[in-house]
Image 1 (spheres, rainbow, N blue to C red):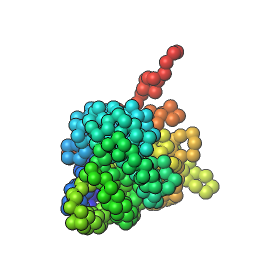
Image 2 (image 1 turned 60 degrees about the vertical axis):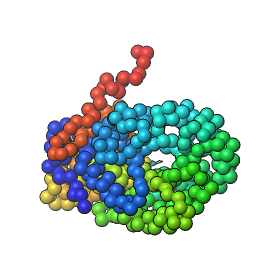
Image 3 (image 1 turned 90 degrees about the horizontal axis):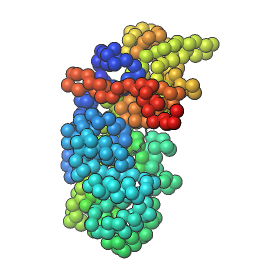
Image 4 (image 1 turned 90 degrees about the vertical axis):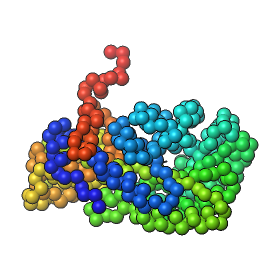
Length: 403
Ligand code: LLP
């Protein structure tokens, strides 16, 4: 197990760069990537880090340096990945509800492309025919994931082409002679149960016979990491083992060798990240004690948006007696970051760390209440590096015109 980042380092980062501050620990990202490689070492497998979890150039560059490819969900993520020095044959593009011009641009960039609707598949066929391989994202009708908002494979989901529409897929493929290289599913985020991945592989392997050009099965992302103390994440070794059996029997039966792709986001960066925040105000009422901090739902939306649990620690008064707190943000709305938390006595000025903030933390931050987005710092080989400065008032006003 990779230990949690030492408090002394987090305190030093906050001292140097102020709060609120996003902190990322490089070696933790590396550890996560190595664990994935190990769990799936018996497969022909490729990992595409889902950049949407955290797109900072330094993080992308670092992940690329580990040998990992990237999955992008917008043309801008592709451009950012290219700027980070990632070559196009290491970039996958999986988007939805986008204008076809973005897909054309992704093809021009030379990325691997997954399409997500019959409409996009038809346009792809008309425009590229057999000249450029494509992946098809299917909606497998599998309910999975930590929360309805992050479940994407079920029957009411907007994502992918429903498996019931496969006949129409085949009609388009044959009328435009489309080269379908990949079948893709992504059933959700925070999928704990290894059986869900097995179910997905079953489904795709059964379909492959009708797609002679398919070389790749893309299983998307969704590995769960523990958020609460004592909680378990996805047993990636169990997934690796169970699915390897399915693949080898498929290979024996059909003589076809398939490559497997994954698009892990949270698994790669979630636990490497901490949101560091200073306590501004302690407020007691008849029933509750609030610790009001210098961050809020504008900088970490997950607790309010997904009812996500993020573990919180008091870094600067760790040995004090424990009390129950409501950790609340500074936004003019209810923005509880942690309810009923038992923490060592919190004083105004104490530094708290909010854990598991590496994935979809900074990335989903906004300037709501006209507050600046936080700085980001990268801790690598024992050194701290500022990788994004804190915003200023000029940044808030940058795009406004006419005054
Ligand atoms: N591939 C595709 C096509 C995806 O849509 C996603 C995530 C991933 C891979 C990566 O999934 P992951 O390994 O990170 O679970 N903002 C939410 C999560 C939204 C996930 C969106 N798609 C959260 O903070 O929980």
